[in-house]
Image 1 (cartoon, rainbow, N blue to C red):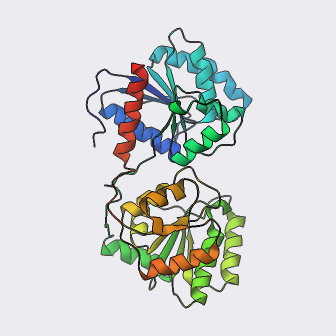
Image 2: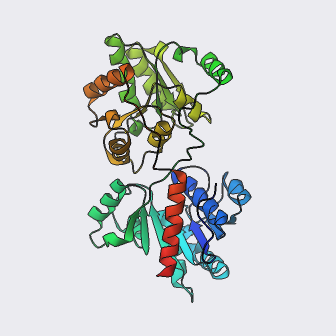
Length: 375
């Protein structure tokens, strides 16, 4: 899918990121790299590499392996190598997506006879301070949500608001098509693998194995629904991870204490999240710490599946705009149960997604690059 029309002139854009393993910043780097190539620009990513590097190169970008993200004093010694790479590439723009790579990029650029433009993206609600402030030094600072823009402007009074642009992350509606239903073979295989999830409305909470994601609240929600005579199932999708065994054991103890072992399933991360969302009656987003964005909210709504979440941070921002019926005050478990029961009974209709699309993000980012170069 082409993101933009042919450019007035070809740009060379270098993105700096710690590695290409997984995560929102990494995914955004690949998506922008793809758009650059499709628009006729030269796209380069400098990172320590990882499983996504092959995809990046297959889609037409170049990758230079340089560990610029490891939090070690030795990493500072790589400024020279980065400066030499940039001197050879002669980029129009250096776009930093993480704090340590941004610092190295900042110092490397200072030693170049022809300095490229410096652009940054703030992907998360980083602790305010000097270390994080490097991401606010770009000629343009991209914030992935209005929540994040408000956050950085409130903590860095010297930051000119005109330099901070909101460009939300986006999802591909073709990857999460409106009204999608998985085929019978997938459904049979899924419910054969997890028979406890069959026979009642399914609530899915996607999120890694950390208590910040609100797994305890989801478990208490199912227990309270059961107490009220409402049958439901819960899938804690992606919670089983190496190094999180003690946390998973804690969750299983709570599930057992509430007497809902037959209604809850825990799994490692899976690749069929689209189909899981599509068979879910509700997708939950119960992070107790505000998040900068909420990609799962957009993915589920794109599929026409209701979302129930806490109304703060990027998740609250998305729900307020796209699905107000799914908002609940943070930590208000009573309201959470009441709203879940309401949505399970009758969920308000969900219109087809007209914003937060991948192409919107790509077009806006490339337009920002053109604006910076044009001065």
